Length: 246
Image 1 (cartoon, rainbow, N blue to C red):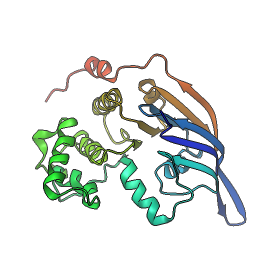
Image 2: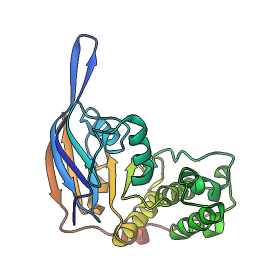
Image 3: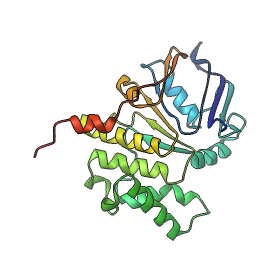
Image 4: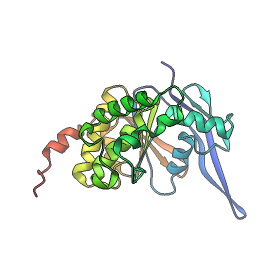
């Protein structure tokens, strides 16, 4: 199988006043279909810059980024935006749901930009995605009628609905309590088991216990790229936590 992502000698520099900040320095790695990769680093490590490039929100100063076989660096802004919508499903810490719309309408949103889908097809696809995250009983609930965990499940369903080649999560459990965090991690592990390619960008080292691979950044360099031979089960951790009481 070809790599879903291939990064070659990636550099990203920013000019701040009279200084040049080297946010990424000759970063190289590849990700194959079906991997669950955590990208970790403290503030200033370069992980946010790398996230923006992986998400086609920014372009490198030098080096190459290939997403599903295409060179992102050579694309114009409009082509890059279209490619991003088709190839990447984003999951954010703050959910980024539309406040006055239902779960179903939020999940349908990416399909509005896909001319291959009719209104009926959009609805069916959105229902399928919500069912996959266990929210078929909340399809007509609005964001303010759902818990944080439910909102994040809607966000995951929205990210999945266009069948992207990767799901790119940015601190996706950062706003959640411990129990809900493990519920979301268990969902990510189930999606991984189903063959989804996941990239989880985080500063929390505990997340790496549940992924198949961890890339660690420091000062714009990759200092570790390790496979996880003993992947923890988020569901087992969840089952061991005390039950909530009213």
